[in-house]
Length: 297
Image (cartoon, rainbow, N blue to C red; front, side):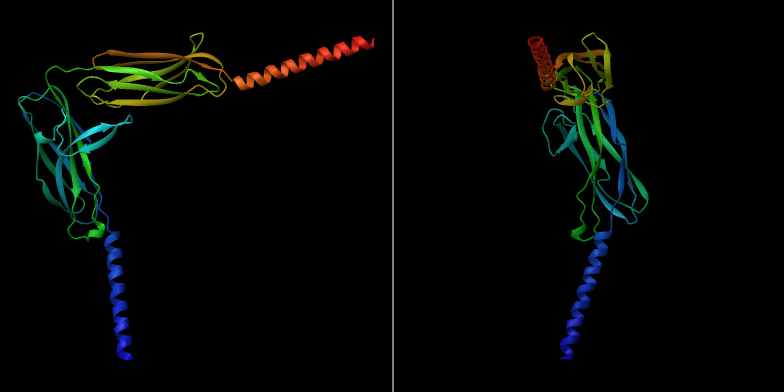
């Protein structure tokens, strides 16, 4: 009986130690940063250049890293970036890039500078080409429960000389009729060119007399080739009535203009119907009272 109890306590003790160890391992964290967040380079076909990416281990333990280059594309209308391994799309650049070192170790609270070598093929298409330098921590001292899949990176915007086409198109999307304000409005800007472009401009709301009611600047974001970005605004106030115009006035590239406009109406028809019915009710009530007084006199 005593041997059985000792064996049971021994097993429980080992299980406790294992749980404590796992808790301690899982509690370990990896904290690091990558800079610069973006690098823009203008290159010639056949040109070879290099740049630097810095990785800082902000944690309290040494960390092993693996570096790689991957293409990325922009999806949706909010600028979301998705990685595309081994992409063959025409704006890719990952196959032009080599990194040294690719596998390395950084001690705690120290940094490492990586050399990023770029070779532009002689037959590279002019315009924008894009890739991300990704850093993935691979700490061999940690168990599988703590493997970190999160990757941080630095984006490369490469512009290859040649026939560069900067061409943006702006469109205003909103309803033709609103019962109440504010008016939900979307400015959709499409990039029809072959290079990333950063537009600047204002969304302007004016009334039927041309008076400006509201003017808001759009965020300054890059719009990538063959992609689009939506800028959403709530224009005006709840108490609005009549005909209004929303317009976008912007610029991009070398002073190119970007404009769009659209009109809409705000009519609180339910409130107007109630008001009209109330006035009619008062009018006919007064007429009825006057008629009754006339009959009695």
